[in-house]
Length: 119
Image (cartoon, rainbow, N blue to C red; front, side, top):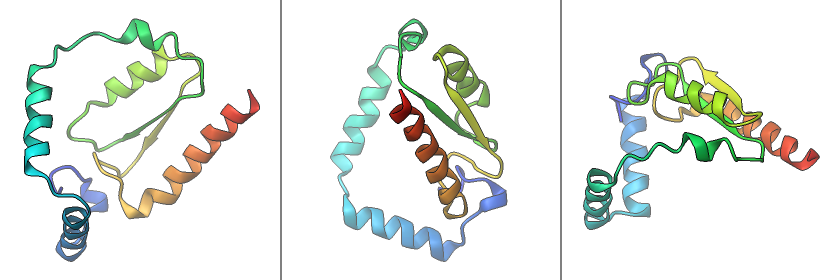
């Protein structure tokens, strides 16, 4: 988890321990993790950009500016391809959802839902 979060929003060891403990108590299935890992290794990487052009609902693409796992260009690409998509690049966010940005993320999702309601 530490490798995926932004240094600007780094969680304390105590907070990380709470998160991991909560998630393990909620659902812990090593066999499921193994299946998911195997599936990702053996799934063909299909280019779905043509399919993305057919989406006709409001799409919100959220990306952490400090994401060490997924390049920002990937989200920019999706936001460009999906008609009418909105791209929200969150500074100080990695490949995680830091507590300090949850309200910002929730507000962006609510705004996107409102766009869908107006259609």
